[in-house]
Length: 360
Image 1 (cartoon, rainbow, N blue to C red):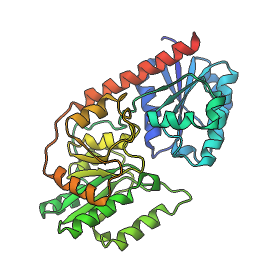
Image 2 (cartoon, helix red, strand yellow; image 1 turned 180 degrees about the horizontal axis):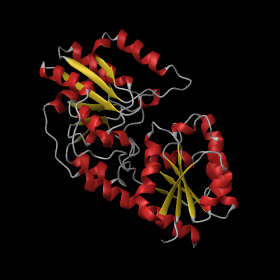
Image 3 (cartoon, rainbow, N blue to C red; image 1 turned 180 degrees about the vertical axis):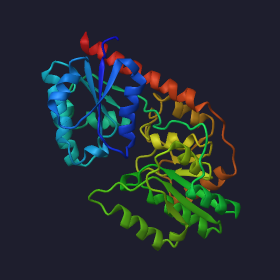
């Protein structure tokens, strides 16, 4: 067996976030050249795993590490003390709480290479004081969607309920992914309320769960839905583990809808996953002209009409109009599996290039 080049460091979380899924899928896609290692605080076991590799890979922010960030810091230090390369993939930076950025600072400063999920994240990092203290070996990679497409669908209770509502004439808006303030998930509630005021029967399904932190995310979410008078039209599924059930729910959505505070960026894997439903996705466009230039799948989805971009600073009225138009339109079909494979080849090539550049 050839020597493994990479050690993909992951958490032991049972319910995974998108960044965690990327970390685990990286190991799978690297095949025999990588080994997946769960960080559990056992330095001796980590040292043994490092002996057979050239580089370790750490991804941030992983939700499961919010309460035990000392583990990746120790892992990064151990990696460098054993003269191994350390590749850090930053999926977010400016959006992170400053305390999390502070705790991550030692890891980033120990990195021999830093890869970013989008040009916006790279720019945020370059403007931070930490940038001057970190390696200049940096790059931007496309983040593939973190789902494996199912060969069959399973109609669970949520999907059956939505199917009945659609049969009765209700338009179902959907949003996939975790629910948290900076994602502006509650904007979809306002869009739904606007459509209802215009006389349209509408419901909303949030396919995901609330991220719990210092904010009262769930309480504020339901308080707003009550205030808008749509609480009986809103469904939050919670974490859905199986792709068969997940895409069974996707099938019952008429239009997916996102309104991000910063506009669409290429790190929004949840948008990509939603696009694989075959349904239109309405989202406010990027602020940067080059935001999607490195990501072949995002560009193809925009060109094919699956992603319907509205103005970056669109309000609920504009989004509601775009949703109505999208609900009456078709989208171009794509070979999702082939596109995901292409993205992963790009990611793996970037990792190999980074490792070769670091060794030279």
